[in-house]
Every structure is written in C-alpha cells, then in structure tokens.
Length: 305
Image (cartoon, rainbow, N blue to C red; front, side, top):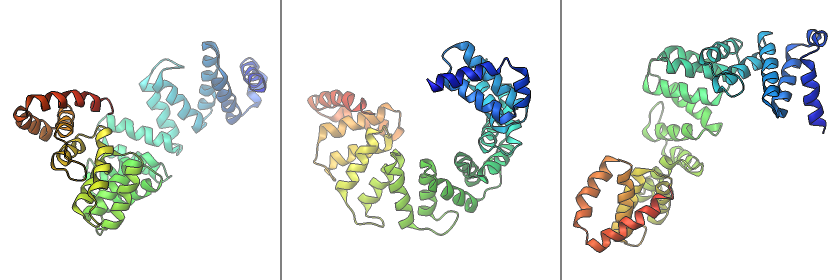
C-alpha cells in the first residue's frame, strides 16, 4: 500500500510546477525510478520517462545513463539509437563508468577501436569489470591499439578477481603460456578451475586435457572424463569430440562404441571441422546396427546441450 502511495505521489509531482522548481535533479530522478518501478499503465511509464528526461536535462549523470538505456531498449520510449548514444556520451563525460563502457561499445560497433579503447580505459580506471575485459582484449591482440600483453594480463587479473568468467579464462591462458609475464602453471590451473566452476565449457575442456596429460598435476583420466562430459553437455564441440575419443579408447570411462559414435555425431552437427572429418571417415565403417543406435542416442545427447 505504501509503495502504491509513493508512486501516486510521484505522479502528482508532474503537475505541480512550484514543487518541481524546488526539487533538485536527484529528487526528480528518485521519483522517476519510483514511478517506473510501480507503473501499471503505459501512461505511468511515460510519466516516469518524462521525469528521467527532466533529471537528465538538469545534468544528473545517473538519469542521463538511464535515459540513454530507455532509448536503446525502446520499451518505454520510442527506440532511438542516435539519442541513446548522445545521452550515453553526456553521462560518460561526467565519468559515469557504465556510460563510458556503453560509449566504448558504440565506438567498437562504429569501427573506431582506438576511441573505444579510450572509453574502456576511463571506465576500467573506475573499476568497471566489462570495460577491463574489453580493454584487455584489445591490448592482448593489438587490435586497433598498440599491443601490450603485460597491461592486458593485469586487466584480466583485475576483472577475474571481480568474478568475470571470460577474464578468468584469458588470464589462465596467459599464465599458462607465459604471455604478459612469467609462466605460472599452478596459478593458471587455479584460474581454469575457477572458470570451470563458473560453468565455462572452454575451461572444463582445458582441465580435461591437463588431467589426461598429467601436466602440472597427477594424471587422473576419470576426473578428466568428468570435466569433458560437463563441457560436452554444455555444447562445446571440441570437448564432444574428445569425449567420443575417450569412449572409443576406454580412457577414464568404459569402452562404449555406440556412445563414442553418438558424441561424434553431436560434435559434427555443430560444424566443427575435425568432428565432421572424423564422422565422415568413421561412421560409414561401423556396423549398421551400431550406427543406428548411435544416431538415436545422439538425438538424446543433443537435447542436453
């Protein structure tokens, strides 16, 4: 009841010019958020958007970012990418980190990666996780900016500590390969484990290979097969192909020709070239009964992706 009353009071605000003049931008924006949060009609949402716009025009960065998002989504106000970018930039100029990140993405889409990197850097300096990842990606590859693997590794580490899964994986790879600093396999494995625990199939696949090879750890084919199965179920084609091999050889799992062929079929359906080549070369040589069972099982396995 109290929430409804607050929304009603915020709506009344629209028609009280004297009150509006006395309010500052933050007050207006708080009312806007209340209206949008409690809105049950299109007219209420339009009123909320009008309040956001008023606060944005008064120079409040949070309102400018919110208004930009409304224009970008086109759900409360008409879709307008141009106005969205305009308001993102106005908020970004006021050091709003999410707006700076959005401005960077817009410049990426426009093909200006150098300007995008500048916006990402400004947001990254304020701790914006996605900006740290995007800037690291550009610096790692030297994509539109001078390559700097050392800085890329530092940024990945910062974003990884903020629980960004992709940064965990990229940091692990750089530590593993000794790029951007000394190689550190133990640290790399730790980040692979954290990324895999966050359900990243690529990390699961790498852990499978590490455990199969015994690289830096004691070889454990059964644990390796477990990680491979998890990645395969998540739709990771290289893991699906590797799992097919494990079943064919009985490595970490019992030999099962039907299951091996089924995972091979699933991997090939994604268009993964090595899997397609293996399927086309191996399946025709299987007994018809085995191939029929594998094709039926592959449809079941495919539904788990």
